[in-house]
Image (tube, rainbow over all chains, first blue to last red; front, side):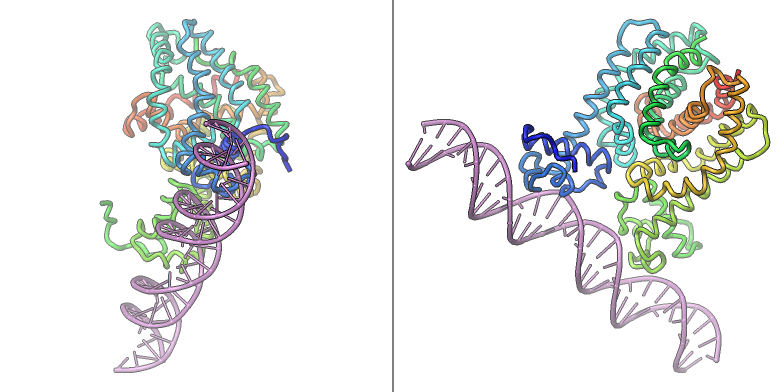
Length: 206
Length: 206
DNA sequence: TTATGGTTTAACCAATTGATTAAACTTTTT
DNA sequence: AAAAAGTTTAATCAATTGGTTAAACCATAA
């Protein structure tokens, strides 16, 4: 099953994609080099030939996984936009990107909780400084009494992120709770992309 | 370090508590029987003497972990209370319980995403039927036009759960983003317990 | 005291896993 | 065409891991 189209991609690429899939699904501890090799249809030795070790391979995978997803979102937060507009596009943009890479949130959260140091540094160096302007902007708005219930920035930000990310992390629960198949889940997300941007603005700004 | 108080608890209990800690922190795949034994200060063979296998031990841990946390919350959803009141107490109760068992959400989510079948069955049999009345209640309110934006029950419920659970799952991110230590995080949660119940009602019911 | 049954220990086992190696094969260079 | 460099394979390794076993230990009952 899943016989890849012709043999266009190089061995190195085949390995990377297989590794990405397996690491995303099973996490570092649960991933097996043999499974990655099988999925890539190559000899296990090739993994080490191209990537030296499991650690190195994993590092490549998560670096590229994060690099692909995070910058797009985070750059938006640096733009010179009114807070209301920024909130709206942040939610819409973020949801849209995750929809295309739905397994990344669980992947990040899992590794962040099992082996924090490995990924924490990435956040510290790549994310924080880009989110700061956004946080400042909320602080400012808060000072001007524009935030509902005068919530501090931390609470506003976490409410925001929670509502965006959690549905993807909690997908298995959701599917059980509402007897939802994958199609139903996608519809659920699409609906979310429609209403959540405005909804978030409404519940945040006054 | 962490020299347990005298030797009151039985070997079986010591094992269980050590296993709980290790499984919660590292997940099934990342957990090592030897580490559990070390943490319990007993010989590794005792693990198998009392619990036969890693699988069995894990099963006990998660069953008791879930059993301890979920029923209290879920029973509340069955009570005959007006929706507004129920929302409020649900949020308050849920947050309070998780605050006492802050590592359970990550644990459940991790296992649910890496090895769904193992825990999914528990949800299907223990949780769903208890949540159903609550969902029906929201549906009903929705029909009467009492829900903000006329959101369907699924969206309401996921928004609710997201805001309650995610902060604990995303703790490592939060701590980096806001340079928060563990004390700061607890204060953050305490603040949340104060305002979130009313906040949720406000953003859900009209 | 001495059987008896449950508990604990240390040594060991088989299977798995990440990793290495040397030879074979393929492509590129000269 | 021959050599060199790069790629792939199969065999193998050492370490780790979950699990077993048999003997030692210890409390309690006869």
